[in-house]
Amino acid sequence: MNGLAARIHDALPQTQCTRCGYPDCAGYAQAVADGQAGINQCPPGGAEGVARLARLTGREAQPLDPQFGTEGPRAMAIIDEAWCIGCTLCLDACPTDAIVGIHKRMHTVIEAHCTGCELCIPVCPVDCISLEVETPGRSGWQAWSQAQAEAALQRYKLHGEHRRADKRMEEKAPAVAEPQAADTRKRSIVEAALARARAASQQRPPSAKSSKP
Image (cartoon, rainbow, N blue to C red):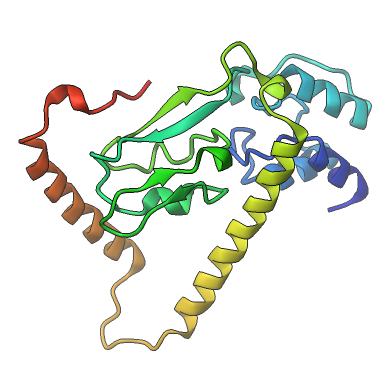
């Protein structure tokens, strides 16, 4: 990452939400520095974020591009623990390891570490994760501090280290006679969990499951 990209990266909120169209804040920062992305593609940063990037790049400030989302209050992921099937898919999706849990056991969100990125929402097979407004009346950098951004970046780096370590362990693990593909294994886990959830739902009141906003 060159000097300008590093300064741009430091000015981003580090939610790692990918709404900008890049895999993380670092990728977006480099694209802006290279002139391949606009300075108005980061909804979590909001209008103040655009102004920051305008000052750094010398480009003219402009409204957020609506195709990447709109500025709004920061959200918090909430897991309906009674409905969670323990599939662990949200653990992999969370960029800051803000979700804790183990296979076939309920998961929960550590509120202090959640950036409101929403990446856990689409991977949940039973739709048991919803969002709650965490900063009513405040959006962009009014809803997110520099200290929170720095903490989120450190957790994102640790998340990457954990995943690399897991990959190394998988590579070192002894091969079995007929290894099952990772995607097939995940599908089997989810299908089994869904079967258990369908059976449990017969005894669950319809109003108990939170609706997704």
